[in-house]
Structure formats: C-alpha cells, structure tokens
Length: 346
Ligand code: NAP
Ligand code: ZN
Image 1: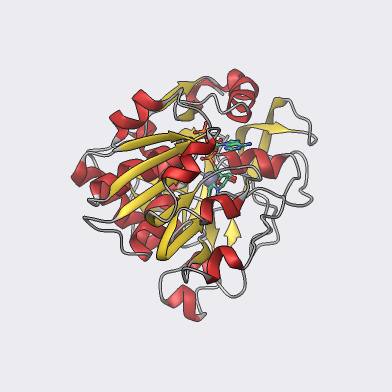
Image 2: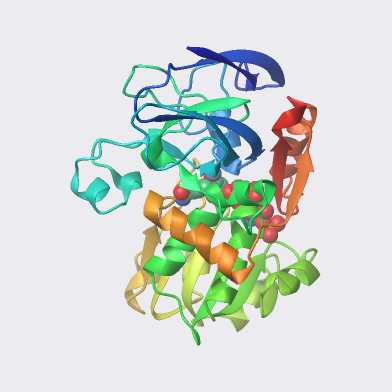
C-alpha cells in the first residue's frame, strides 16, 4: 500500500477537507500515476451528495485525471515511467464480455469499476482524482498527446469523451443540424466537437448571457430556452440534440424540436425522471436515447482528434482550497467552462 494526499467530503453536505487515502500495492499490470490536474465534473457533485444513491464517506471524487507515470508493475507494456497519461471515469471492467471485447468497457455486462464510488476487484472502495496519486491497471490508462497540456487534457477524460462518443455513434457530419442543450462542461465540448465534425450547431441555453462565448466556441446559432418563441421557431428542425443538462427539464418540449427520424441523446444525468409523452416520439418517428461516457479505445481516439484539430476545453485552474467554491459555482451554472484543480496545491 502507498499513501496519497487527497481532498474528501465526510458527509453529503461537505465541505472538503484534506485527508490521506491508501492506494494498493502495484500489481504486475498496474501503473502508479502522479496526478497533476483533476477536472471538476457535475457527476462528482451528484455522486458525493448521494443524489444517485448512497456512497461511502470519506468520499474522494474526480474522474478527469491527468498526470505522469511514476512507477509501473513488472508486466506493464503500454506505458513507461515519465509518460503523460490520463484516466477517466472507469478503472476496470470484466474484460471478457461482448462489450469489453468491443472496446466499450462502459457497457461491461458485469458493470465497469468506477474511478470513485465503486468496489474494485481487490475489494477496495475506489477513491478518485482529487488526490496526489492513483493506481490503475494499464488497460484503463490513456496516452495524452504532446500537443495537449495536462491541465487542458484533464476535462477531456469525461466531458470530452461523453460528448464525442454520441456524436460519433450517431454519425454526425457536414450538413447536419445539431443542437446542444446546456452550455456547461459537457455542453461546451459538444459544441466544439460538433462544429469540428462539420455540423450546423445551435446552443439552447437558459439565457443569452453566454451567447458571445457560444458563438466563439463554434456555434452557428444561440437561443434562450426561457423564451417560449425559441420552441416555436425551432420546432421540427434538428437531426440530433445532445442534452447535457444536470437538472430536470421538460423533455417533451425539446423532443418537439427534432425533425423526422431525429434523435435526442440524453447525457445529462439528473436524479429526477424525465417523463416522455409517446406522442412526442410517434408523430415524427423520433428517438429518445442515452449514452454513457465512451470506451478506452474511443477515449484515445478522442484525445488524438483533439490534438489533431487543436481542440481544448476552456478551463479555470483553481487551487485545492477553492473546490467548495467551485462546486457552488457549478451549481449556479457559473462555470466557464470547466474547473480544473491544480493537484500541486493539495
Ligand atoms: P455543468 O457544467 O454544470 O453543465 C450543465 C449545464 O446545464 C449548465 O451549465 C446549464 O447550462 C444547464 N443547466 C443547469 N441547471 C439547469 C436547469 N435547472 N435548467 C436548465 N438548464 C440547466 O455540468 P456537466 O459537468 O457538464 O454535466 C452535465 C450533466 O451530465 C450532469 O448531470 C452530469 O452528471 C452528466 N454526465 C453524464 C455523463 C454520461 O456518461 N452520460 C458523463 C458526465 C457527466 P446553461 O447555463 O447554458 O443553461
Ligand atoms: Zn464526469
């Protein structure tokens, strides 16, 4: 075992406090990573506050991890000491089911092992990236291309892959009309990716406050969802809508914006249900879908795509003693557009 410094919440109300956690002894295929930066995802907040179900405390969130390989187990071949690497939302899976074989470990039939809040194959409760070190089996560690700084790479490990994967799965290309609901961490990456894939991109945000930013990020159009005219003027117009909203919204209103055969993909994960009226779907053969992060192979592909197309998230790097304040700002939709913790300040 080795000891890592971390920031944890000790109950569902917080606040964060410094603590020490134990990382397992290096197994033959394990990699010890010295974490440099960790992004703050809204899922960290849902999880730590018990909104998705009970968790164990102390609870160390963080699944947007970028760092340097500090040591490797005796059988490791994929990475070497000194490599720049990343870890996202999962750290293990069964490796044997059809989905693991297809490289979609997030849909592992036995359930993937989450970077935090899971019990791993050694029986240990996993603790996330708001910490100085982590031990991860090599198959779940990706390479960060030289063109990407570590702080900019961190948010790609969740916000990046979670938006890239559905855009690829639904085969977005030039000429298609894509709408992104919610301009936060995931939303702003969805805008950049959809734009890079050639789509005509529309942002649907609560207000027009971030309109100038949205257009700079690559959106062609920007509408406020607080304005009822938005739903009238855009009715039936999109091929694909990516909903990144972390709270309950009137999903039928958004389904009405889809064209015939259009799909609304929900990546936002509020605890509350999103009730669908079947007539929102039937009349125009629309689909309502979900998507969970992305596999390891696709995560590497996404990082390479970012390096090649010069795509990086808009980030605000903070010190560890500002995590509580950052979480409050995320809750108020006051984030431009991802907070990243400088782990050197732990
Ligand atoms: P975020 O940065 O807080 O962004 C969410 C955005 O949703 C906000 O910026 C805001 O955008 C909009 N919003 C918030 N509250 C709203 C409300 N009451 N009504 C309407 N719009 C609202 O969060 P994130 O980190 O991008 O995560 C977004 C969601 O995706 C979370 O639920 C998270 O758990 C989930 N998630 C899912 C996956 C997956 O695998 N499916 C992976 C990662 C995260 P505007 O200000 O523009 O309106
Ligand atoms: Zn996340």
